Amino acid sequence: MRGGRRYRLLRGIVSLLVLRYLAEGEECGYGLRRRISGVLGEALPPGYIYVILKSLRGRGLLDAREGSRNGRRVVYYRITDSGMDFLLRHRGAVEAGRRAIEELTRFLEGRGGESARGDRGRRQTYWRRGARCAVPAGSPGRCAICGRPAAVRVPYANASFCEEHYPQWLERRIRRVADRYGMFDGVRRVAVAVSGGKDSVSLLHALAGLRGDYGFEIVGIHLDLGIGEYSRASAEAARRNFEMLGVEGRIVDLRARYGFSVPEAVRAVRRPACSTCGVVKRYALEEAAEDAGADALATGHNLDDAAQFVMMGYQSGDLEGLARLRPVIPAGRHYGVRSVKPLFLIYERDLAEYARIRGLPVAGAECPLRDRTSQGFIRRKLLEIEEGMPGFMLRLVQEFADGVQPALAERYLREEDVGTCRICGRPTSKGREICSFCAIRARALGTGVAPGATG
Ligand code: SF4
Ligand code: ZN
Ligand code: ZN
Image 1: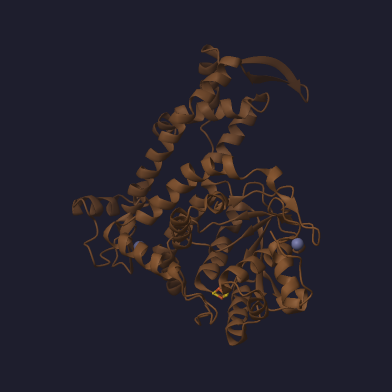
Image 2: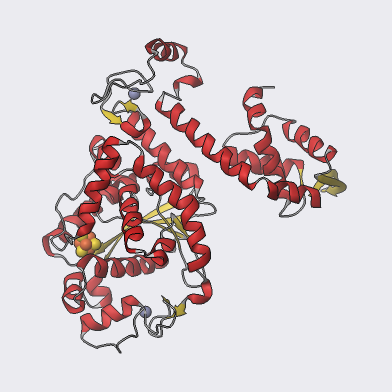
C-alpha cells in the first residue's frame, strides 16, 4: 500500500476520527474517507478506511446496516455506546498526542522537513553535518531546507532559512496555527484588518498566499483613525498592499462614519489612548467586516502581544480579561462575524523579517498617541527572557491558550452574562446599559452618557 508506513503511524488517530464523525450520525465508508482525507490534506489509500471500520466493528465500537443510494447498495456505520465511551475516554491521550506531534513537527521543520520528502542529496548533506545543533549560535548558518547560506535565523526552532524558503516556512507556520484552532473552517470570505504596519501587512500577504488552499476570498479593511500624518501614511501603505495583491480594499474613515476621530475620543474620555483606541477599532472593524459580507475577521495580533497580555493579566489578576484572550472568538448571538488571530503564535520579529524579505510596503512611523506605560517594560523583560530561553513566549502563550484560557472561559465567559447595548444593540458587560464604544462616542460628540452606564 502506497504510503503504508505513514498510515500505520496514523492508524490510531484515523480510528478516533472515524468514531468522532460517527458521533454526529451514521455515515458510509466513502463519506468517512472523504472527510478524513480532507483533514489530513491528502487522500487515504484505497481500502484503508474499510480495514479500520472492520477492526472497530470487530471490537464492538460501531455497528452497520445496509441501505441503498441511487439504486446502489451502501453500508452505513453507526457508533455504539461502547464506541462513544471509548472516544470520550481518549481525551487525555489525544492531548498527549498533540503535544508529542508538535514537538516532532518543530524538530522536523527546523531540520529541513522538506528535504526528507525526496531530495536524497540534500538529506545526506544534512545528516553529514551531524551536529545536534544545526545552526551555530549567533550566525544565520545555512538554510535548513536547501542548504544555501541562510538569511534569517529562528532561534526557538533552532533553524535558519534562506530568503526563498523563509517566507514559505512562515506561511506554513501561520497555516498550522489557523488549522490548529479551526480558524477558517467553513469560511468563504475573510476580512483582514490592515493598519499598514508590518504585522497586519504580513498577515494580508500570508492569507492571500493561502487563499487557494482554503478557498476563501479576501477583503482588506483599513480604518482611518484621523491621527494626522501617521494615519495618512498608514492609509497609503494599506492601499498599496491592496493594489499589489489585487484584493478588494475598503478604507473606513472613522470621522465620516461615526463623527469623531481617535484623538478627539482620547481627549474626551481621558483614559489611556491605546485602550480607548482599542475599543473604537474593535467596534469599527467588526461593523466593517459585517458590511463587507465577511464571515471571519482576521487581525494581526502577534505572539509578543499575546505574551504581554498574559503577563499583564496574571500580575493584575484580571481573570475575566484573560478568559477573553482567545485565538478564535466564534460568531454568536452578538457577533455576526467570527474573529480570528492567525498570528497568535507567530513572533513579532519573524513577521518583521517576512515583511523585509518580501519587500512589503509598510508604514514606518510610530503612532504619536502610543502609551508609554509599564507594558513596554514587561515586553522588554519578556524579550530578555526569550533571548536566554528561546521559545519561552511561544510556550507561555500556547499553554495559556490550550490549558488556562479554556478553564477560565468556563468560569468567566457565560453567554447569559452579556447584556445588550440600548443604543446600538451590540454586547455590553452584565448590568451595563451602554457598550464601551457608544459611551466613548457620546463623550467624543459631547452628547454625554449617564454615569455607570458603560460596558
Ligand atoms: Fe491606537 Fe495606541 Fe495603536 Fe495609536 S498606538 S493606533 S492610539 S492603539
Ligand atoms: Zn533555502
Ligand atoms: Zn453600543
